[in-house]
Amino acid sequence: MKKAISKAGTSKVDTKEFELPETVFVRDIENRVFQGIVLQCLAKIDGITLVEGNFIDNILGRDSLEGIRGIHIEQDSKHQCVSIRIEINICYGISIPEKAEEVQAMIAKTVTELTGLHVSNIHVIFRNTVPAGQLKNISDLVETASDNSVLTESSVEEEYNEF
Image 1 (cartoon, rainbow, N blue to C red):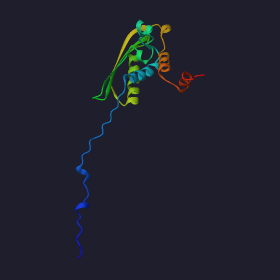
Image 2: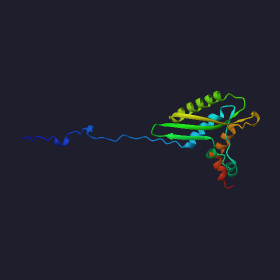
Image 3: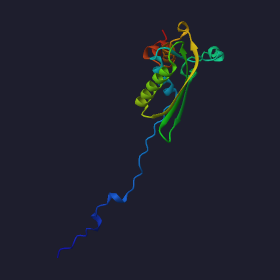
Image 4: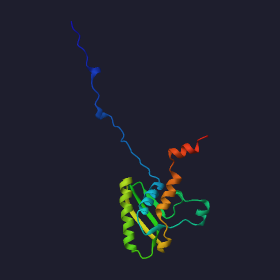
C-alpha cells in the first residue's frame, strides 16, 4: 500500500500578508550650500555687490563663506521650499526694479535646478548706491571663499611634505 504524501508543509507564503515600511529618503542641505549658490549667481551679475562685513569681521578675518553677510536662508523641510533674503549694494544709475528682477530670476532658477527645492521667496534689499569706481566685484569674494574652503591634492601634499 502506498501512503498519501501530505502537502501541508509545502504551502507557499503569500507576500501580501507582510507589510514592509516605506523607505524614507531624507536630504539635508546646509545653509552654506545655498550661500555658495547665491554667491555664484551674484558674481555673474554686473552692477551689484554684497553688503560688506562689519569692522569686527574684518579684524577677525572672516572673509570665507561663514562670514558672508547679506545672504540669509530659511528652509521649510515640511513644504520642501526655501526662502532667501539678499542684501546688496547697487551701482548708481542702474534701474533698481530691473536689477531686482534679474537677481531674483537667476537665483530662483539656479537654486531650483541644483537643489530640487522650490524657492518660495526671494527678498532683495538694496542697502546703498555705490559709485562705479568703488564697486567691488563679487567674483573676488567667490575666489577668496573657494580658496579658503577647497582642499586640493597639491595643497595636501605641500602641507604634509616633510622635505
